[in-house]
Image 1: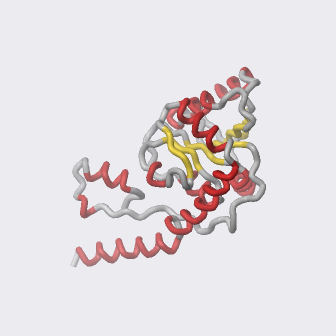
Image 2: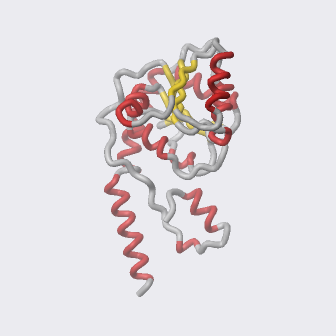
Image 3: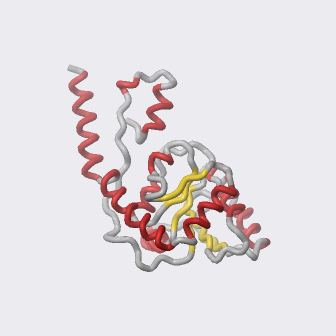
Length: 218
């Protein structure tokens, strides 16, 4: 049982019989009632602070004269490097938080113009993307691993080439300079979550997989 076509392809291309692989996507138990009406001028990264997550590319993508703040929430081996970077680049508006959870995490996601997932390693199906979409917040993410399957480009978010600070910067500028587009994507994000990542669909898919497996065993 895999979460997406990306993993299905990787397994089948390495010898696992295709008919033995079934897709059953992740789910969220609930979504926001509506996109936040209190969207604030910041973009949000929540995750591990490490090279493979693309955090350094994100820092390079932030334009010094941008009117939009970057909030970084997380811990990891690059924590001190990022603190030093923020201190030495005072022209860039960067706020550093540590690990966040619960209501604070939800509020940060809901009120952000968008979240950023700049990974440079294969990602399977990041829950951070589903959490963002389910809270009515668009996502800008790198085109790698299973991520592109999670973003309806131009409707729920934007994609860019992994490691390209220039493409990421362009996507951020496009998103943050167009509040109407953000609002449009926010609404689509909730619709997408309810249709693709709802618990009932997950449950029915899982039961079907188990039923098919039991039948094949005779």
